[in-house]
Image (cartoon, rainbow, N blue to C red; front, side, top):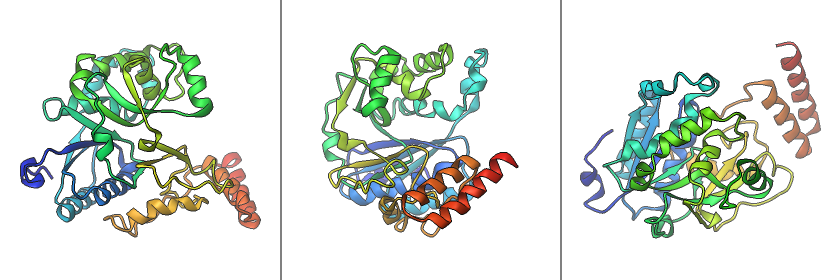
Length: 319
């Protein structure tokens, strides 16, 4: 899957887009990649996937995307030894290595690209990225969208951010050289591990501390956040102006226990992807069973809600 970039981009300057995923997020990431390609057919794109491992099946699906869209997808297996220097921190074992993945992106692409767009795997693109690419990030480390509501207010106060800005790290347009010069990787990991209190959003909180005043806040359409569970009963629609729709929260559009019809945006691009027809994920624990019951109740499906509430109780108290 490592084709020469020039061969696949016809000499055009590509935008490098990166993801950091484990096996649970390949479905979401695959759909995200296809959605970007479908809405940006005139733009040369190179994708980078950082992951601890990849199955033969998922590797084959990525090769299908490369062939269909004449793009490049570079898979980079994360060497676990990169975390060895932090092993002596007493708190290191409390965290999954997955939370550090996005912090590795700039280092992995240093010398390959001067700018990279990082995307979470729970994002769907529904527009052109040309306007985002035109944003000048020469004077900052990242461009990102400010988080909203009580989350932002609480985190600004808790983290004591002097800029009075708290950004969501699901979409980061990164100046690679500035990131490396600021040694963001080490400072952010140290901030997580040295914290006397557990961060609410570990890598996101750490990035906000390390990049306080050095992040350019951009329009919300570049990371339009939508909570599928929270909006189940509200009938809130996804903005048509949003370039990237970010499905925040525990409930994802690839969960078969989603009761919010806005997941149809995800299904649109799943149907165009090599993951078309792949089974969605059922509730995997009693917490998700309870959420499914609540979602069914919010949509007036009382009988089904009662059944799943019973399953929740059985799995919680009689595992």
